[in-house]
Structure formats: C-alpha cells, structure tokens
Image 1 (cartoon, one colour):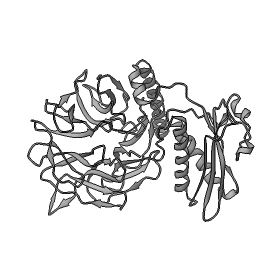
Image 2 (tube, rainbow, N blue to C red):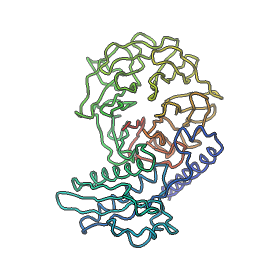
Image 3 (cartoon, rainbow, N blue to C red):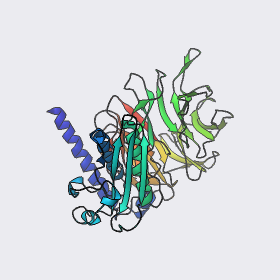
Image 4 (tube, rainbow, N blue to C red):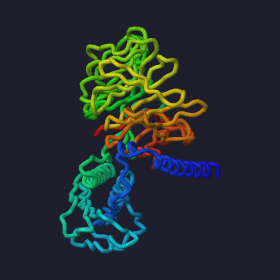
Length: 449
C-alpha cells in the first residue's frame, strides 16, 4: 500500500509541478520562449500509425519501433502526437494504402501521418517508414526511409530514433532532433561511482569506467568522442582529485597529466581544442585552461576564494560562466575566456548558486540556486538582461542541469522520488521524465550530437 501511495504521490507532484510551471511561464516575458524555441503554441499534429508486421516474427519489433517513435515525437516539445485511441481502425503499411481523409477528420485531426511496415528474418530486420502531409496528399513524402540492420531491440530503437529525428528536422525547419543523442552520468549502482552513458530516453544504460573509486562531473567533448571527468584514481600511493579522460572510440582512458593539489570540474571549449578546470596546483583553487592533452596549463583567475564549475559559452567561445565563493558564498560569475573582466551575476535574493550550464544559443544560463530557507532548484537566466525563470519548486534537491543540443530540453539530478536520480524535462519545466531508478545516479551531461 505504501509503495502504491508513494507512486501516486509522485505522479500527482509531477502533474502539479507541470501545471504550475506552465502557468508561471505563461506570465513570463517572450525572451524565455524565444530563447528555448518553445514559444509556438500552434504545434503540428503528427499521428504515428502502428507499423505493420509482415509476419508474426516481426510483431515485437514493429510494436517497439512504433512506440519509440511516438515517445520521441511527444517529448520533442514542438509537435503534438494524438492518442492512438483516436486513430481510425485501418492503418496504411505502404503509401498506396493511405486514405488521408480518415486521418484529417476528428478526433485524430492530423496534419501529418507516419506509417510503414516491418519485415524480419533471423539475420536482418527491414523497416520501411514514411511521413506524409495528409492535408496535401498529392505531394511527395516528407520523409521516406528504409532501415536495414541486425534484428535486435537495440538496433530497432536506433532506427526509431533516427526516423523521429528525421521528422523533427523536417518539421522544425532543419533544427536537429535529439533522439539519437546520449547522456553521460555518474552511478554508484555497482558499488563505486563510475561513469555511465545511456540513450536520451534512459534506455541502453551501460557502464564505461571501472576505476573502483570515485568519478564525478562527466563532460562530453563537442564531437562526442571523449568524456572528461573528475576522478580519484590512486597513483604512487597517493589518491587525489584529478582530471581523467575517456575515449568513446577506443573504450579506454586517455592519458592526461596529474597536477599537484585538487583538480576538478573540467569543461570543453566549443571548438574542442582546450579544457578549462579548477585546480589548486598553486595553492588556491583557481581556474586553469590547457590543451586537451593537459599541456601548457594557464592560470585564468587569481582571487581570494575558490573558483570552480566553469562552463564555456558554446556559441561565442568568448565567455565562461563559473562559480566562486570570493564574496563569501558560492555565486555565479562571468568572465572572458582569457580570464579578464570577471563580473558577478547578481540575483534578487541571497543563497548558494552552483552548476552553471550554457544553452546552445549562448544566451541562456541554467543553474541550481538554493535560496534562503529553500532547497536547490533549477533556474534559467538571460545572461544579457538578468531575467529569471524558476523551473522546479518543492520537489527535493534539483541540481546539475545540462542542456540538450536542441536547446529545448534539460537533464538534471533530483531527489524528488526519495533517492538521487536522473530526470529530463522540457526547458519550460514541463514533461518531467525519470530516466534512472537503480542505485544513486547523478551529475548528468547531455552529448552535443
């Protein structure tokens, strides 16, 4: 009974938060919706018919493909997917079977229809997939694809993500979808804090490192070929926080020099040629920049107090956001990428600010802020005007925000369900989804591609 009650309570809280967040945002300025790309209330309705299995053996994968595409489109933030309960009883499996009027009429009211078929043998699965504008059925297919590969759940999911991204790209004027991206995170489910990755929707979770120690703050390189992170790997009998690097291409750690003191919170330059991190190699925790092999570290800050958690503006490459307690408590600062012109971003209240993350457009900053007598919550600020929007409220600790490459989604860690887990949401705070459940999971970072 208690488990069922807690689940119901969690569902209620998520629904309540979604409604209150949207109500608050409805009163906010247009800067926020323009900056996140979530401002269009006239979303095209895209129905996804059940993909037709060509034989009984293809039924499981046809169902899987259909559901993953629907989920991807629903979470895109720019489309509406009508409930399958509204669909007509007959679904096309090839273009010749398409009857547009059935899908245009209420209650489906579709603008576009995705459909297709699935064939499968012991060696290969073949998926034919189309998207048509049912309001203009004489036109060519908006998307027409044939996918062939291994008949595995993993491969079928990959094809479904690709088809969804094709649809989103076509209907958003060329902006990329995120269904094929990955999220790196830290998990202690196997006894140690190791680096893991998963698909953007939480599927295919797998462990990368086996350091049997503590790993923290993973950060994807711009080309998604490497992950830099904080590690506590022993060397010569000493264990200290250092910068580690993992190659997705080789599946192994890449050599990175050890520096004196504590070295933490790495971040990449937008062109992928430099790493900025916090180090106490010269005494005080300051920000340093080096090439991606750790060569020629250059000190950027020099103040009384610690500086850490840098985030490089991905659009301009000219500005770095970071956290410093030089004023007494951790606060948010901006500086030029060469360390000059450091400026405090004043907030309308006191408290602690951590975990800054730039949006892909280089205009918005997400961060976690603990206001007096409150918990850590996710906020978004327009860096130029200092306007603020609060995305989470009264749902445990919410920290470590990271943007999806489309600028319309965020991933973060939260204790709202009792344990520390990874969640995603639209950048307006709606549609929260829990991605992890086993063990403690934290410090997510969304790949750029």
